[in-house]
Amino acid sequence: MKISRLSLIDFELPFRTPLITARSSLNRRKGTVIFARTDDRFSGIGEISPLDGFSRESLPQARQSAQHVADYLGNAEVPADPEALAQVIGHLEDKLSAPPSVLFGFEMLLGDLAGKKADLSLSSWFSGNALTDVAVNAILTGSPEDIQRQLASKRARDFRVYKIKIDSGDIKLAIEKIKAVRDRVAHDVMIRLDLNRGLDFEEAVGLLKQTKEFGIEYVEEPLKEPTTQGLRALREKTGLRIALDETVGETDRFYDLLNSDACDVIVVKPMVVGGINKSIKLSKISAKQGIKTVITSTLESGIGVAACFHVAAMLGDHVLASGLDTLDLFQDSIINENLPIVCGHMNVPEGPGLGVTLKDSFIPPTV
Image 1 (spheres, helix red, strand yellow):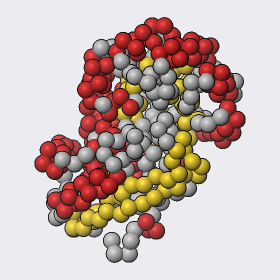
Image 2 (image 1 turned 60 degrees about the vertical axis):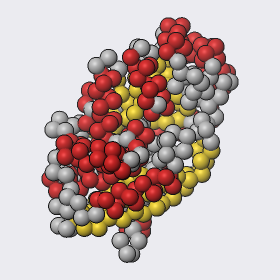
Image 3 (image 1 turned 180 degrees about the vertical axis):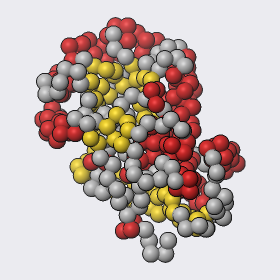
Image 4 (image 1 turned 90 degrees about the horizontal axis):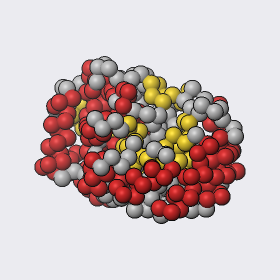
């Protein structure tokens, strides 16, 4: 099976309401869809959506690189097995210097085509013992009142894990947010805190010491400066498990912390670290030290979220409830299928490959 046509389609997805991150306020998400057809009438998709402040490459840089890769892959054979796919992606990185988001985009595209050819889901094509469903954490942001409103709608889907974004050093406000959740969910429902590198050491200690009664599963990126000494001391003083997110994309620092027993969980964003195989490799390296993995989308469209689901499904017992509850943030997902979350789980999408297809309205007539 060979690629007969390959196109890059730019898109913009407006958020329902502006999304506040640790670095900025976002009104829309921009990215590029890779759309391919093969000589035996299969079609496949991938997504390239680097995120400012998280990805090392900008979208214009990724778009330029993607065009080079698209030109290179014209009339190329679709890999027949995961080992062949890994070789292709390695070549794109070594020979064409493709950045992480481009590697992930083309890896999901080629995996989508290969899965369709084999009539297997992407995760089953990669791994014979992939999960058929993945636990998902709900995301709660904003004021205590905002969180209460969000919680009211999310409880219908029976989430067993909630992740609260803490976006300031106001300890009283942070505790109000946590309490707003704990008072409204069952005692065995887990709560995660994401501090987005927002606090210095003393602020973090002051906040986290007051959270013991709330049953916190772990705290993500608590310190402005995540050092081995600081993270280990914070864990000792508070008794809380530490998760690394942004740090995972900072290769040298991450491995230093990993080898120094300074974290308990890693949050892996395939769009940031460079794709499916790299995400699995990071998880396996961490698992050897007893560290669990959370796979998280990077505010991608439905295409990227589906790909992240498949990555999580491949990890089996290594993966905790993953961060895939993001599509409700957008006015559109750009895919035809729904990716529903039921009883706190997302099931493998129906159909081979990624299991999702691009809406016709996003496909130019000439493609």
